Image (cartoon, rainbow, N blue to C red; front, side):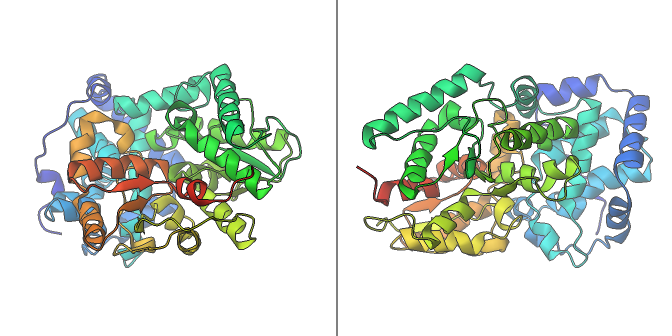
Length: 445
C-alpha cells in the first residue's frame, strides 16, 4: 500500500448521533473503552487478521465502494481497516475524538459488511468482522448515527424495530386474515398454536409498511397445507439492527426472545420471511452471542422454504410469470448460507424468462443496504447510492437484454435497490419471490 489512507482528508457528513456523541468524548474515555473491547471481547482472530494482512490490495477490486468511486484508494477494504482498527490497535487506544468521528462514519456508512472482499483475500481476512469490532467500540463510546440508533432504541423498548405496539401487531394479523379471507374462504392466520410444524416470523417493517406480505404468506401456507402459527407476543420480529450498531447485549436479548417464543409454542421449526440481515442475526451472530453454534430451533429462510414446497409439489401454478426477470443475490443468505441454487430453482419454476446478472451467486455485488448502511438514514443516502454504481451497471446491463423485473428476496435489498433504480433512472420493477408465487399460484376457492 502506498501513502497511508489515514492521511487522505475526507469531509464528514453531519449527523447528530455522531457529532453529539463525539462532543462528549475525552481521550481518557476513548482509551479505556478501546482497550476494554480489544482485551476482553477479541482474541486470536483479530490479532491474526491485523498481523497477516500484507496490503496486497487484492481485496480492492471486490469492493463496490472502491469500484464505484473510481478506484479511490480510501475505499479499499484494507485501507478502511488502516483508517480505523489498525491505528487504534497500534496506538493502544490513544486516539483523538476527531479520529473516532471519522472511524465511526467509515465503519457505519462506508462498509456494508457484505464479505465479498473476504473471498478475494488470499488469507481470507474478514474485513466485515473488523468493521463490526469498530462499530462495537463506537457503540460503547456512544457514537452511532442517529437513524440506526433509533431502531436499536425501538428494539430495546418494544422488541421490534418499528415501535409496533403489541395490540397493533395483533390487529394487523386480524386485518390481514380478514382481507385474505375474502379471497380464500375460511383462511386463517393461526395465533399461538402450540405444536405447529412451523412458526412463521417476519420483520418489523412488514406490519408497519408491507402488510400485504403477511397476506400473501397466509395464502401460500393455506394453499400448501402447512401446519403453521404466528406468535401474538413479542418475539415475532426476527430483525436486528442492534447487531449492526454494535449493541451485542441487545442483539442477544432479541434473539433470546425470538427463540424462547418458538420454544414456548413447541413448534418444530421457524420459517423466516424474505429478509437477509435477520437471517444473519438468527443463524450466525445472534445465536453465537447466546452461546449456541447453531440455532436451538431449526430455522429456514423463505428461499429454502419455497424450494421445499415446489420440490414436494405442494404449490401448483396456473402459468409462469411472463415478464423477463433477473435475480439479485442477497449477501446474507447467499454468501452467508449458500442458497443461490435453491433461489434459481424457484425462479426457474415460476418465471418464463430468467436472465442472470454478471457476476452472480456468491460473487454478486451487494445492494449496500443489508449491512446497516441504509438504516443510517437520509444523511448518508447519496454517498450510499453513488458508492453502488457497479450495482446500477449490473442492472442496466440486464435491462438492455430485456429484463423488466428484478427479484430481490430480502427487505433491505429492496430498500437499497429501490434507491439505485430511482437514482440511475433504470425503470425496473422490484418484487419479492412471494409476490411472484402469490400472483401465479393456484389458490383454493
